[in-house]
Length: 245
Image (spheres, rainbow, N blue to C red):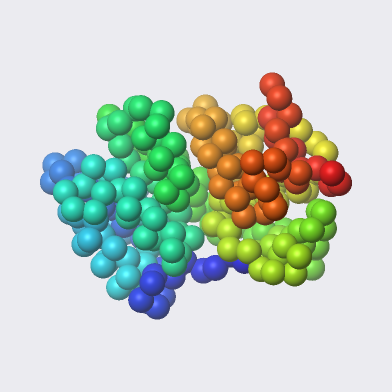
């Protein structure tokens, strides 16, 4: 089941007309330049110099998107993502100076929806934020639509997924990925197609994002994620939903 972006303390998720960005970054100069650029781009920006401060700010009032640096002085970005994901599906973009594949994948596995690598162009970051905001505000599908795939019941308009009658908790990205694949069972989607349809961009994208979210989704919808029978890999082509084993 898709839950609203609420903090662990029960504070309401921000959903005003001006998007609120929570920026968790310990470098004062980087934080100041990002704040100015994001403000000029029409966002409200709240700042935190540490992971603990960022989590506290989120708990107090929420945000529409969270930008979190991986290298923080107290609670690192990985742990920030994990703690946010325990109670919220708020879109998260991790900001990292690391280019190592393991670190990028670890950040996505911790719950981030996307990432940018320092140094980056602000137009790239802005494009990713806009894509996440569009996804979080768009409707899931036609009213009343129900998609039945093996032991899954998917209700795109209600943001609900049940497996054998039991509601599942998916992040927004996981839910959109599942709905996109399930809308055309047996159709093979390439990573590039999924980046465009689910994440909302193509040339900025990285196929690792798709692969990690597929793995995370399998842990929730598959009886045996190591041997998937619903969300299967088509070698050399991409992924598809298999309507029957």
